[in-house]
Image (cartoon, rainbow, N blue to C red; front, side, top):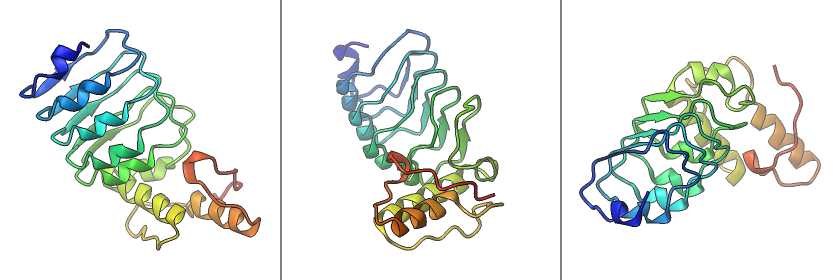
Length: 185
C-alpha cells in the first residue's frame, strides 16, 4: 500500500484483501473520505493509531489476520456500522469498541481464545457489545456502570476482577493486564 494511494482524498472504498500485508501505513490517515476498508487475509498484527482518523469509515473488515488489540484511538470510529474481526487473536475485544455507537453488525467467529465479552453478550448483538465495552471502560475509570439490557446471563467477570484487585490494593487495568478473578458463572 503506497503513500500515493493514501493521498487520494476522494477514495471511498479500499480493498487490500489477500496481499500478505504486515502493516497499514500511517499515511492511511489521509483517506478522509474512506467509507469501506477491507483488509482481510493479510498478516496484520496491529493497526496504526492513524486509522482512528478515518472518521467517514462505515465498514471495516479485518478477517483472517493476526490482530489481538486495537489502538485506543479507534474509539473515534463512531460511524462504523459493520465490523468483521473473525479469525484473529483477540482474547478480549478492545475497549475502544465503546465508541462504535452505530455498530449494527459485528462478527467474531473463529477466535477460540476470546474470553471477553462472554458468548451471551456477543449473542445479544453488536449494541450489547458496545454497551459492555463502555461498562468495562467505566470500571477502569472508576465511574458508574449501566449494563441494563446487555443480554447478560452471568454476572460480569470484569466487575469481580476489579473488586478483587481493589481488595488486594492494586489497580485493575481492564483488558490491559488484569489478573484472573475466577469463574463467575
